Image (spheres, rainbow, N blue to C red):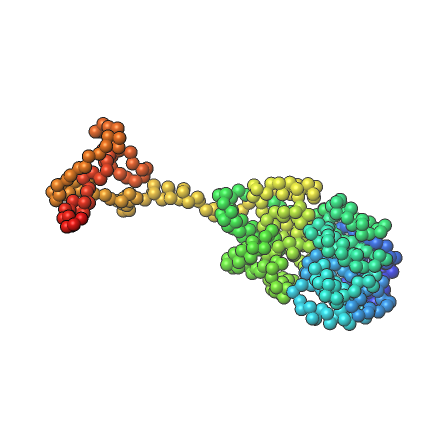
Length: 490
């Protein structure tokens, strides 16, 4: 069996590894470190949680042991897709390089430019960054990448597949052609692999497990249920009820858990719902302040926070030990994310459980996931929850059970306005004035109608049927009946 002492690493690095409690490298470490130490490009593919970060951190520290960085000119560069993953790489570097004099700088969003500029101006051996913040520093004239000797792209498929291709290409153009390039990822689709071939020169391909496989230490389960109603509000509420029922059914085995949602707004809603029902939970997603995100992660790591409700910002590369459960509140939109999500549990040989909630609309996404992992996810019986009865049913059942004597029905009001009867009006007018009907031309008169013919009125107006009137009828204005004396001389 290979040991770290057999890998030709720097003695100071071996000392730090021993103090960290490690003795035997993982398969990806044992196969990726030797070609990296001799200067070859490496394409590493392995399941999440198998130690890929140390696979490039350890040889990078060993190769940089000689030499000194100049101001604004880092000697190595590590690119990560998220702030959390970049911060984790920085933590690993601190652990393994603590007996060396190598320096580092972490360039991520949410941190002051001024503090980062001060570190860069001093000169750093290792620069760990997200692509956006790295290019911001370069465009401000604070960074020069012509002295980069080793370049690492962590979670390469995510970096290239999720819109980072222009940034990655620009960064590669800013680095020297003679650099050494290391790519590491848990998944590598064929079309993404073709892109990586443009960046790597005759790489040593290290694949310790079949692509897109899940760990055998993870017990997977799929809970399928049909919401009582089709509207999203009802389905969303019943999914939250189902999530809490699953947590309660797992009992003491669910020591802590990460709950993944597809949308940031759903992360906030699910976290507030859990807090409302007495669960110790907090959200984490890309719209939160970096300081708040780091506090939340630290609380989850030290055990003061039990449930972490997250978007996919926490699905890639985060090494959080002893996560007992992963709940997929939503079926991932991208099938590769399923592998990364459930990889947050069952790490380093530990046992873990991953449960996923699905509704009938998720069938296509489920098929894509099962095709990717080449495994049918075991179906798990859904726990009983209190479902909301449709409003129409509740009203009908209430009306049937209600006693008519106790609750008499109120008569329905007609929308039509009450109008006085025509007969009353005609009588009143006839008593006051003498009606003089002017002659009307025959051409104006309508065709005669039977006396009993119903009157056609506007729909819904509630008019009484009766014979139609021509002209003013009996309703002659009073001013027309007044007599006026002729003016003299007119």
